[in-house]
Length: 158
Image 1 (spheres, rainbow, N blue to C red):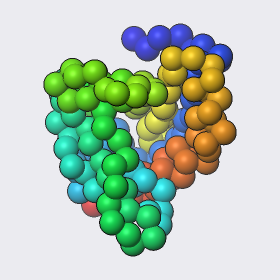
Image 2 (tube, helix red, strand yellow):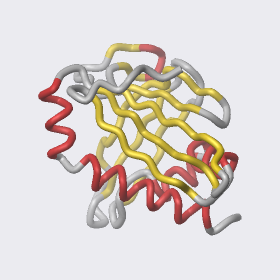
Image 3 (tube, rainbow, N blue to C red):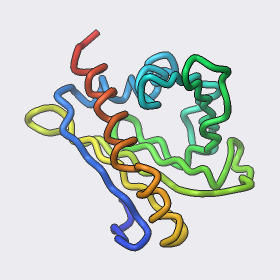
């Protein structure tokens, strides 16, 4: 069960993806597929760690303009419900270790739809200032872009 939406603290975005949940789940859990859509193009993503279990780490790096890779996300999975839901936070790192700077907790849900899969992201913040900063940083453009990249990847099929 997901927590109720708090508009003062949370941002949400969703999309119908014309592919089965299994294809989207695979794109989330296979590091090579994940690298193809997780960061808005033309930037590149490298998965350093992806331990898909509660307490497992999710560490990615980003390369912009073909430059060296730099830190992007260092997070911890809180829940991994096969084929249905992924919850991660940057308030913790792998192994449940507290992070220096926690910013958000994201809940990704996949639900069957007659046209494919309802894909939703519910991103929670500790205060309104962080929520607003995330929105101003381009939450809808950024998360919308990567959802589009994910859709493009899985809608093409194997």
